[in-house]
Amino acid sequence: MSAAHEIDLDTVAEIVDTAAKTATAIPQLSETGNEMNLEQAYEVQRRSLQLRIDRGEKQVGVKMGFTSRAKMIQMGLDEMIWGRVTDKMFVADGGEIDLRNFVHPRVEPEIAFLLNKPIEGYVSPAQAMLSVEAIAPALEVIDSRYENFKFNLEDVVADNSSTSALIVGPWVKPDLDITNLGMIMSFDGRPVQIGSTAAILGNPARALVGAAQLAADEGSRLEAGWTVLAGAATAAQAIVPGIHVRLEAQNMGSVSFSVK
Ligand code: OOG
Ligand code: MG
Image (cartoon, rainbow, N blue to C red; front, side):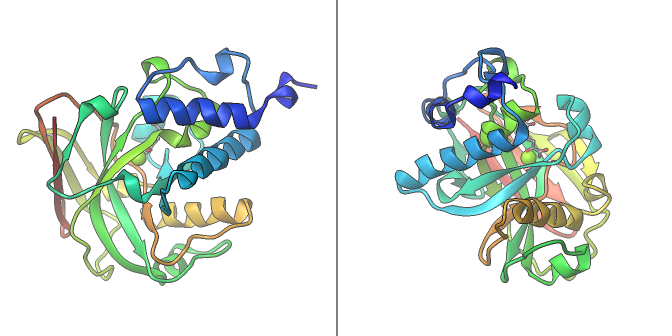
């Protein structure tokens, strides 16, 4: 029997929640006596979401992680994961983020789906797209609460998969081919990551399918009105004070924010 059975999941949920709330780095759970299995890690994620809900936040979506080779290689993990997105995590397009609210944030070029119908169970990419009202270029600011941005799969899942902030650009109708659209992420006008939506599982609609699958696995579903982030098309890039971050996505438009 593993030590995992003796872990108090409520205590662990409070540890990760407090770290996020106070922007304070913590040692990896797996190295400080809180080694969990994946199921327990997701339970911690759900309980820490509940702590946010208790403070008045509302779940309005989910984000997928490790849906591209670039991200898998950067973090040394290769299993698709998800995190929960609340209303408080949204930053307006063209807005500003304050680095004091983060531990060591990085930004990623993504695309977002807006659902107008629930997605339930195991569906095909084409079926999943029938519930999509609109798509948009999006920037995700991830911020691991673990020291040195280092974690194993269970650690990162317990930490809500590093979910921290997101900036969603203009919504457009999902009637364009999204399987191979160029993406250029720039800092102060200089490209720092260049990629394609093809890097996201060969078709970002598959990330939506993956999200529906993870929901089905826990007996839930993706809800109408939710925003779903497909996962980064490239490696994440550390952000520093004073820069302007912009993502230009082919045929979709652009989205940007500044760093204070
Ligand atoms: C985990 C979150 C990964 C993505 O887009 O792949 C993610 C991390 O790398 O900290 O958001
Ligand atoms: Mg991401």
